[in-house]
Image (cartoon, rainbow, N blue to C red; front, top):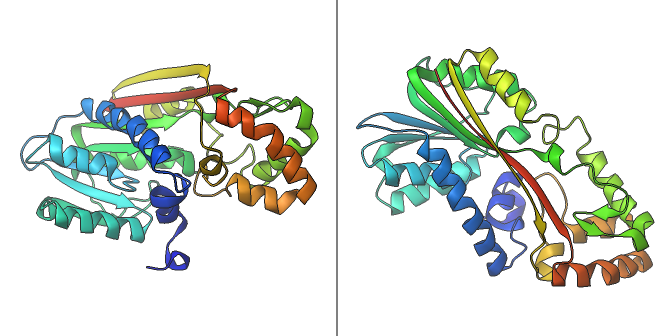
Length: 290
C-alpha cells in the first residue's frame, strides 16, 4: 500500500517512530516488551474468556495475551483500519485468527460491544490521544463482566513538560535558545497544554476509574530521571515522537531558516550523539476490578 494511503497511526507505529534505524527499532521494542508483560500480569484469562485490547495498534498486548493465555479470545480494537488489517494478517500467519475479533472503534465509544461482554480490558499509551477520558473509563466499565479487570499503561507527560527555555528534549540549548523556542512554539501549536497528551496526571486516572464505578483500584507510578543514551543523529531527526507531530527534520524545515538549521544542528548533534542530555519520564500502571 502506498504511504499516501496509510493513516497516521499505521505510518507512525510501523515506520515513523523508528526513523528508519534498526537499532532504534530494537531499542523501542526492548522497552515495550516489559510494559506488555506488566500490563498482562494483572489479568488472568481462562478458556473462552475474552480480552478487549483497546487501541491495539500493532498488536503488542493482543498477541502477547494470545500467547500467554492459550485458550482465551482477544478483541483487537483500534480506530485505524490499516492497523487492524495488519494485525489480522499477522494473526492469520500465526494460526490464531480463529481466536481473534477485529473491531474499528474509539476508546470513548465502544458501542459496537455489548454490556458485560468481556472479561478483561487493556490499553497501552492510548488515553494520551483521547480527549474524553472519563467517558472512555465509563465504556471500559460497561463492557466488563462483574469481577472483570482493567489493566492499563499510560505515560504521564506532565512530568517532563513544559521544559525550561534552556532545555530542548532534555538537552542544554542555552546557546541556541531563541532558535529552539521556534521549534517549541511549533509543537505547542500542534499539541497545546489542553491536548490529551498533557491534560492529565496519575491523580486524574484514579479519579476517572473511581467515578466509573470500579471497586478495587491500584496505581503504580514510576518516575525516571537519568542521563540520555547515545543516539544516531539521522535516526533522531527522522523519528516522530507521536503520530500527530512532525519529525525534527520536518519541523526545522518548516519554521527555521537554512542558517538557523545549520546553527541548531551543529549545537544539538554532538549532544545527541554523545548522550549529553537528561532523560525525564514518568509512567503509570493502573489496574482495577469491576
